[in-house]
Length: 312
Image (cartoon, rainbow, N blue to C red; front, side):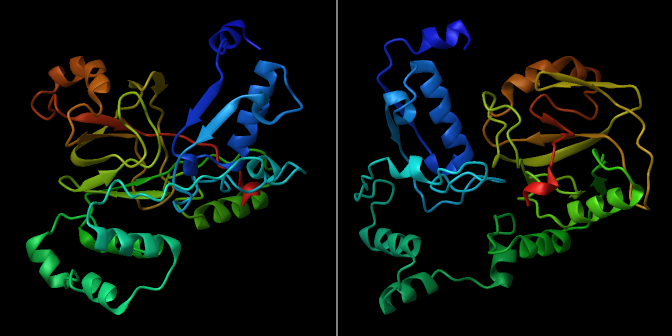
């Protein structure tokens, strides 16, 4: 164990972890093992430190992970670690002052049946698709299935550019294995692929959501929404230095009728603090292209991720 890590935990008696629903069961067990190693107390959960988890377990588990209350796949102890914790429900709702609406939300969260008056209240807020197109055309739509989301997005606008992922298959011995693995990869949902779609339709002026953490400190996190302002095509040999990493732009041969190029997307976020550090880094580049770029825009570059298919 690194000495400065041990020094950091000197005198620590209690650890508070918020948003417990975003922690997978594998991460929970890693926390347990790490604290046991730090304290040297291996016979007690979490190294015999007091630990408080806060959050709403009704929320969805993190992508590519099992819920925190389930046992990890590579452990024989199952959910024993989670069961060692005491549960204290907080029954007072703080985010919603309307008692009627608060009761409706609580019932929906618990999967309970709504009363007739409660159903009528919800249905009174219903609006037709035609009404929404006229009055709130830019509002965010929520769908139950990812398939419905993709169908709406594909029909909502005419894309100016379709960005295609460049797949690299590693660990396969034959072309048949590679082809099979590629087909399985393309069948995966965006959730299974770590928030990275195979193809992304792009059009300037439309909102786009970041689906993975790029720079937490800079506010470029999963769920951040910005408006696409410009699509910049990167030239061969150009270096991309954003988010602390440098990548060389290599030629990408096209294997289909769709364009396969490296691009840099420029988004404008409603909160100026989002992407502020990133904008400082690319300011010299923006100043060289003031005819097409703006200092208020934040660049988003192509990201890579390892997607082990054996986990699914």
